[in-house]
Amino acid sequence: MRNYFKQRYIQYIILLFILLVSCDKDKYEGIFYPPETTPIELAIKTATSIGYASSVAMSSISGNSPANASISRSSSGYPCTATIYVDVNSSYNAPFTNDYGELVIAGYFIDQYTAILTVLFTDINVTAGSIVLYNIHTFPVTIDNDIITSVYASQDINFREENDTMLSIDLTTGEIDTELARLQLSAANDIYIAVEQDAWIIETNQDNTPNITADDDYMITGGGQLAKITSNTGGIYQQALLDCKVNSTCNRNPTSGYALLQDTKAGENDIKLGQALMRFHNSCDGKIYIEAATGNYVTYSGKTIDINLQ
Image (cartoon, rainbow, N blue to C red; front, side):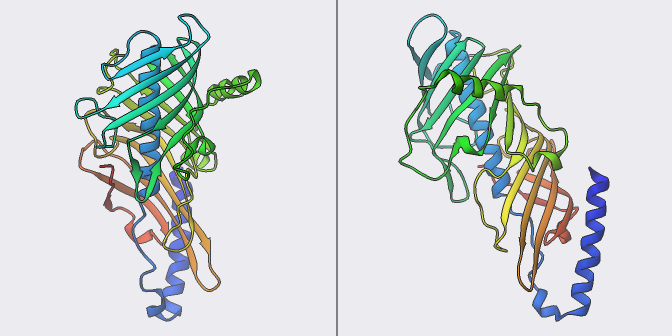
């Protein structure tokens, strides 16, 4: 991975050097700027919101509801449908949001270990920049030895329509099979492969306390374009996370793993292309380290920038 990035880095350095020494320097002022962290923040907040909802749902269906959750199920046996109401407040907060209100989860539970969920954020604003997460459509969830795995894609996430608030869990047999098949997806082990996929996997570690969500840790791997965010160059961002760990003891930044940001657009008389490989660290300081960068981000390689998760 690093050899590939080193080659790209050298190519961009040569290209940009030629541009700067052979053309009007004033024309290229402002060409370099730090990577925009909003797409990375969006990916982290979306994943942890899904992980949180999955944790509450799987605990509730097994009789270990957190103190701020209540469940109504269609039957005591399986399969069954259930609706879980979560009161997010100052004592029982959700990850990366200071808003208080109700979170509603509807689920089709094959058994106490496997489910298909949909989530509605009624009063809670999960935001990154100007983007608001409204609801999450059907996605599969499974639990094994205290680890909850949730799999989703961009088509499952609604950032656009505030009035799209229906909790739909009325699935055909074929739709159920299709959702469950996604659980067979393996997490990418290369961030450059992950960014080309439209697939995200989050593992939630309940730390042997299923009725307490405050000590849950999250591990996120995936990539793609969750929402259409336009860069200041007019390009479109794609992002990826690899082994990104969100620790329950730090709400300012992930404590390990990598993030990749790509900003791609070719203009008529301008080169607008940037890529940044960033690394999280175990200091809880709201920072992210740029391990390597190319294109418009090249001058920020080796620097640390802020990431805004609060």
